[in-house]
Image (cartoon, rainbow, N blue to C red; front, side, top):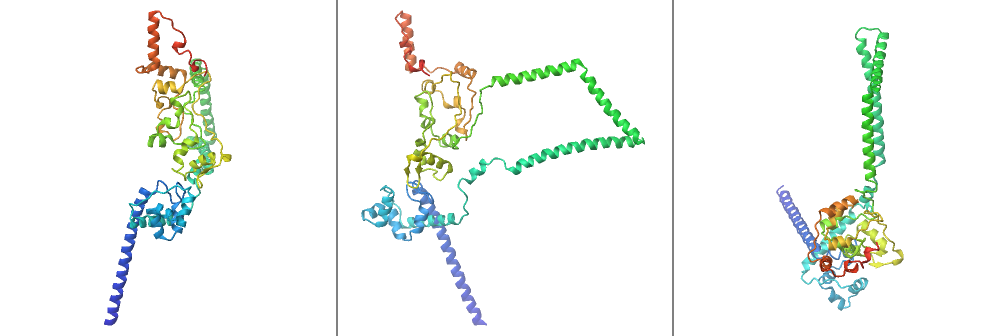
Length: 422
């Protein structure tokens, strides 16, 4: 028995030792992956993603398929040395990406690189084992609108409410009969009492209808209400405050102008120098989105419109097509408005007319853009004339008028194209 006890103790010690080593290895491994994640985000995310090709290849399948960690370490620390040594793997990657050199990370140690490789493989394994969902699934669900079940449910509620009202009316009539029946009246007397009550109600209604003062007051109220409604309707004809059409691409001004603080004129460059603010070309979008949010379904709409293939980073002009944006702010054809005159000369902020654009997920017409609205703005806005060449010229013209000198239309801006052509 003693021998069995000793064997059991030795066996249990061995099991505990192995479990402790496994736990220690797991904790060290987790710590290495955590370090690798921090280094990956710091050093690699500007050019690489795990599952999408950007400036560099998608690292998930590349590092998982490449089992030579020693070569990977040399490549990450100093890829230029491998290229100069005519390493076949290095030359293949170098030529595939149009001979664009990768940054040399000589400051990373072998342990740092091992941590990055471990993190990439672990994350790629998680992504491969996770259930796949269709791209843009959330967006599709959001665009479907209310489901058929909800619509039929609402219709059912309305029908049930109507039935309940009819049943309640029947119940009220039955209760009235019961009240009269408790007074020990015969059934015929109960029926006559109910009919008499109904006749009294009809007589009261007829009496009210014959009251000329009451009917006249009601008619006057209807005329006032109808006239007010007609006046408001006519006054707001072609006033589209709150107009928010569905655009072909879900562009968020809240994200770009609000959170990321991108200046309005980076995209709408015409506002500073021309009559129209202009809709930015898709090439302006590609300044960022060639490498940013490349996995987004909305960004892929830009790629499709440009005929751009993110896998090869090349354009096919035969597949290019314009984006059909829907105009939001419209003025009558006879109304002249010049953006540069207001933005550059008047120093008017975009928000003055377009509202808090930096908070809008989807743009809508904030201001009524009516003549009254424009005149009120012109009445309360001070003119910033200091250092303005236009007003300096006007001062000189007024001085000439005081001196009795000749003043022509040309000296008062009469040669400007916008005076006649708009």
